[in-house]
Length: 222
Image (tube, rainbow, N blue to C red; front, side):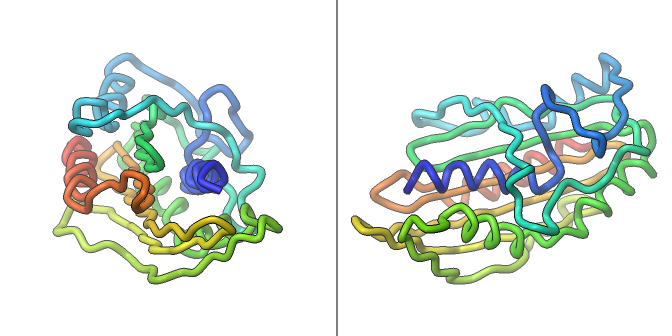
């Protein structure tokens, strides 16, 4: 069951409009990458040193967008131009996951347009849909405990977020957790953070660490 949840976390990451660089789609932005903007995008992402102590392991993003619930596909950004992007690696630690991504656009207006198109999607609805779709006939029972936006004090000029708290009951145990999504835009840059935390007996991610990572991504857009 935990493996199924991990796959769903990656799927929700892709719902936000990020995809594996190796598998470009017709809806992806045009690419005119330059060295300076590529370095900026890479600096925005979460790095191993940001995570603190623990057995953090590299997770490579996968393109599971074809399995996303109806109405939760990547938006069409093909008329926009990216000049920098960074999507890998992501990180996992004993049942929890931290994913991040960043992109630099040719103009600030293009970045704002990209943000608006991605932000139109309902993270909470798509995440719950992905859960239900992924669990399928496994016999596990999903219960949504709460869902809604996440308050941060003026993290960026453009900001949207969502958090779903849940429990999943299977034949052997019940696990609880949360999935939090943050999406920021400032100037020509956009950044995203996804935190998926599974409770004990696995190793959850503290709310303090999650908040610190979100503030880091937002601050690096400047």
